[in-house]
Picture (tube, rainbow, N blue to C red):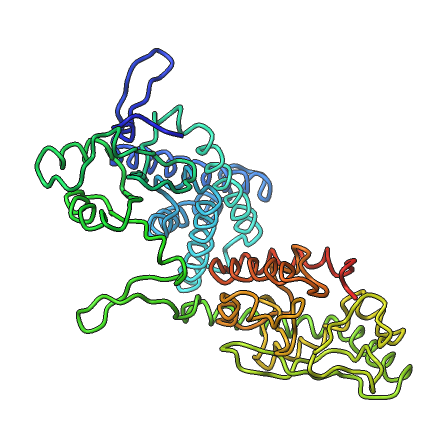
Length: 468
């Protein structure tokens, strides 16, 4: 997509051919108002329906905190929390899912605050719990529908959405995504080496209402563009392809001097805490639920071949520290490969009959729940590798210099690479590279919701043609 200079100013021709310019500020106000009005109407209807469904009367019983009273308590709390939490705004047009999640989080927080108020006000006994729960569930559906509806009708109701990102290409072409204005520097007569008022005015007209301006240019022009971008109120950035070898990197500061942060872990302390609590909760529950399978598998291994039930093997963990991984022993004891110098292959003659079944069904991996509870593994993360493992004739870290970046978080029982089908032997370099791409994507884009999606996706690949 290539647009004429100045195309980022939010100009839009409607069905009658008129030209309407919508500023970012006005667009935000309209979007706030539309979302807020829709949410308030949705909450009101939800609690009104709860009254009808549970109490049989739209206005409830006199003298009791019925649905309408609940709405009056929840609505203002929700509005404040939703605004504070970013559930409204111009980005809701492009990121509907994020807007929905933030709205639901605000609704849950508002409900908890209301319950606290009810408890402290000593009116909990008069509260119709079923009415409250029904109204809350219907409210969640309402705020979701409001955002889905706005995503479809926003352009018709609000006019054109100004491009928030403008990309200026000055002799360097880069790939861009949707909802970006592409500006060719020569076509727009943008010459950053001319540090004059005319150049500043042309630059401002070209980027229009954009909040983020990205310039792709040769290294010798970066200084000029840096000076030119400083005249804008928008955030100015310059693409530096040479920094790709340091990615993911960001700028920091030490003693007044700028630094390039090339490592530092992908998860903040809060994220690590959430992930650990999730691992403990899910791991403990899974251990209890799956205990019959664990006991049955242990007995099958013990009774069908001599040797220990569990197989322990050194693997590379978080911060590249070695740890002992637990698996049900699937090979004959004398043939077990504790260094993983030779990866298991299809129809491997080292496998016992029970071991082959355990591998095909992924049951052999279940003892790693104890690794999760001990804290040296996570439920979801890059799979841990043995130090001696090879892709073709090369050690894993010899294949791709980015290999060690996957060890900045705990390894997992399952991961993004596994649910995408990248498992089994690594006979070729590409087998490892495919897994590495997924691992690095997971590391750089972690969220607890993605962990949940990966867990559910894992259920579909427990029995897999590459599981052997």
